Amino acid sequence: MEQDGRTRLAKGRKYFARLRQKKTFDLSAFFGEEFQFDIPREFRFLSFYLYERDPPHETDKIMGVKCPSRRMTLHKYHGKDQWFPITPVDADSEVQSGQRGGGQDRENTYNLVEDAPGFQETRVSLWHDSAGVFGNVFLGEVKIPLHDLIQPQEHDAWYFLQPRDTAPGRQQRGDLGTLRLNLHYTSDHVFSSQSYDSLRNLILQSTSVEPITGSVAWLLGEVVPQRQDVVQPLTRVFLHHGQVVPFVSAFARHEISKITDTNTIFRGNTLVSKCIDELMKLVGHHYLRSTLKPTLDLIFRERKPCEIDPTKLQQGESRDINLSNIKEYISVILKAIINSALSCPPVMCQIFSELKELANTYFPNEREVRYSVISGFVFLRFFAPAILHPKLFDLTSEQIDPSTQRTLTLLSKTVQSVGNLVSSRTSHPNFTESYMRRESYMREVFALCVTAKHVEGMRTAMNCVEEKEWLDLLTKVCQYNSHRLKQYHPGAYINSVWVCCRSPSENAPGCSAVSNYLECELKVHIDSDREMERLRSLLMDNISRLEELHAACESVAMFGGGREVRVGGTTVESPPVAYKSLSAVISSVRHLQMEHCNHQRRILRTLRYGSKQAPIGDDNYLLLQSTNNPV
Image (tube, rainbow, N blue to C red; front, side, top):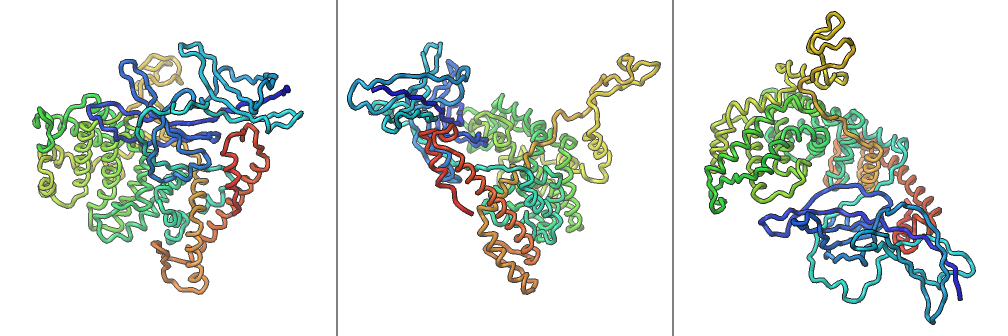
């Protein structure tokens, strides 16, 4: 019997993240990496590959891989801390992803002759022609059961490439260990911009709602369990639409108005404090790099020991030498921070100006508060964390050894202490002595940097919003003028020639660089629609909580009464105002959810098993069908 078969092969896209640890004298295998990345929509598997560096050959040798889930089941691992066994990798078990060769489509016809009984399937293997020493590379294979083919019809379909069968026991290579993963996976389907206009307007109008606790933005921060999930998209939306300063000002005013102890201002993880943190990371990245990275690079390059705690000194180390090293580094860092005032991004300066004005309004008799509201963010939440964890702030990509990490800890602790002193009511000697009692080994370091000169320098660095610093403010206005040139002519144009460069053209570009010009583009690329879809998804995931608040506020709004409403841990100060906001946001979210469900149904109606989008052998298609749930 002869059969004419035709098939097409679909490669399974498998995206992976590479974790690299630089070997040090510390042979502990417990290390971690934290990273965020986007995955193309067409991916089918997410795999994590571990490589071992081979120093002599400067190559990476693959140790193993763990593929925790298909695309459609990744949500099961969201936010969960789990250990996965590391499985060995070889040419047979891997399906190679990506396009190889010219990428041209080809059709080949084969005549299959059944010479022996039990001939039940056709197996097609795909190889990549390689001129290297290792020969051809196996890409994957498909197995087509012949009993599934209907004769004499032509069978034209896409098949999902699978690993090759291996002999029993081939995978036994000993225990390769385990990999702990804490995945945070989100999948958003972004619609056209006008689809989000209603919800976007409700969120942007939050700054004008009185009281602010009845606004959509505030309610959003209350109903979502993990506040950090809200902070990033919410801050980005307000920043993109130029409303981030009014947004922060309105929320900060509400928080400061409730403060009874000025020492606790913005020290908690409230919505506004976390939004300011996120804003500083977004717009202050270049500022942070230009201020800290030169010194951090020097520390990573020199790797000088800086341990000054006598109980932690390593054998052969000299405390005097280490003390000299740490003093050198802290002096350079403090000088860089003090001289960085004019490099602070305009948006951050505007935010700090608003915070200072609020502090003066609510605490007119406590002069130190106007410094503490700023130093709490600049030092405690910006510079000190970046020094302590430079990888999280993209200031280095190196794996930091324990000795260097200890250096960063001491530097961060010192900067933090200076920041506390800037806003302290206590005199410098008293404050210093109080701190020394807890960590006496830091006495010499604090004696160097906790001085009136340094404190005044730090306060001057924060005074870019003060009226008495009008000269610095004018300089900053000129610096961030959108029409400001990078080059200028220091000489005059006389007798048809520039005196400085002798150029005859009056419109010739400048011959000298303008001083203190920022080399970066401070604008942050933000996809507002994508961030709105993230917020919509968060609201939909917590729709029952919104409806619970809505029902509680409705009774008060309908029957009158100005009493507060408390549901769970949320207190609504003005139920009528919150009821109006909740009604609008629930309606908007429900409408968007209906659009999503209709879009999903359209996909399922047009998607055919065996098409390029859903090749035979890909279980993601079957899982997709099971997720088609109504609103």
